[in-house]
Length: 574
Image (tube, rainbow, N blue to C red; front, side, top):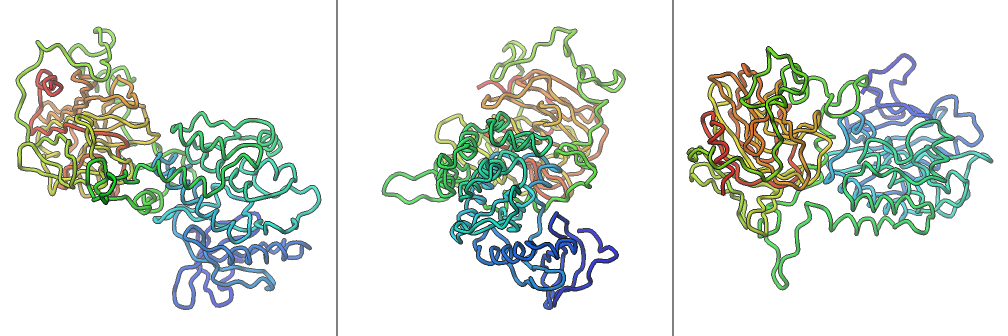
């Protein structure tokens, strides 16, 4: 919200105006308070538009359309005065950024959140079309992300399915890059036009760019009509196929919103698998989630997170002040452009010493393997039901939330990427003063566009450490706030990889091992207190859970000392 400026109204009708929320081509949007103190959004049209012949008709239609549309995924209209000198409309205030703002400032949405977005927007279109309307301007800035899902706003150019358009001859109504070909060509506008726009919106959420590129409006409109959409950056093949169908040039070939819902819902990672015939499903049963995730959990990351200032560059990795991302790059692992006096040479490490990256699943020479050390805690994560993750030492059993247990031996636990975690009741290791080692087998379901964490321990503000995937370098990482060492190996989606992070407080080093081989080390003199739960499947930053892991994890081990390379190699043995 921005402060009011000179010339802004103090009140409109019975509503007090307290700040600016935004501005568009049709008018300004203010944050207001109702007589009872309820927060509302007030849209006031630009004075320059009031005397245009078609304007009041258009604004009346927006108010009527907004009142007609119900459902959980739109913003209800509370009040309006379409005949005022400067017409205004009051709707429920929806806290949360627009989809455009969230993607620009925090990065693209992960696959599971994309699926929820697709379902929510399809359901919104069902409500809009059921009211006999076509939105005609569905775009990222007209989608708000809230803690209970997406909301569609701005019915400024919506019209009835059986009405004639109230536009000037030759005028094009809509937003370049998100309009349907029939909108561009001035053809008949049906509900299928909104489906085309939905496909373009989802492509933007998945890749950070519209499917018809950027450039001048005429160039983008030409691509919409004559060129195929660019969907190469959409990571999930099923979503890519759905978007291709939505973006078909011929309206009759596009799916309906109801068909989109049917295609998205069964594939959603949080949906429970069907139990055997004749028996109802139970929470935590084999192949089922321990708890169904909610829309709030999927969108809290966007609705509740403070967004960076407007001048920031896009992408979550650039958020100023985030210790997972504001890293001293001059003290990273060798071969990443570090200063020699800061980097810690590892024995036999680096291209000059004959280092060869180890492929996923490979293990070191058995002759170099030491006897297995005794862990502080060890979770195989091979449960078949329930919400308890058993610690093999018997001392630190943990609670599983929204985790899907495997149906086959050796597959580990599946984490959904937005709410899954396995957490102990309290801390296991002293991250500030003691040495420790953490290890885990991990398998990414996809290569994510943002940081994801396999193992961490909660502090009050941040995690004390992160064993994670770093989207900044596209590598595995062992990190502290403001410091991390990254791997030489490139992660591969679908491949099991063993990660080990060693904090050696005596030597003052962080070391990262991938498949039993040391791939980097870095000076570490940072004291980070973290006295919260030991967590598998996410990290913590800004006093909230972040960076949820999208894939499988198994055989997590914790040690209260720095293991040797030979001992770490032993962790890979069956």
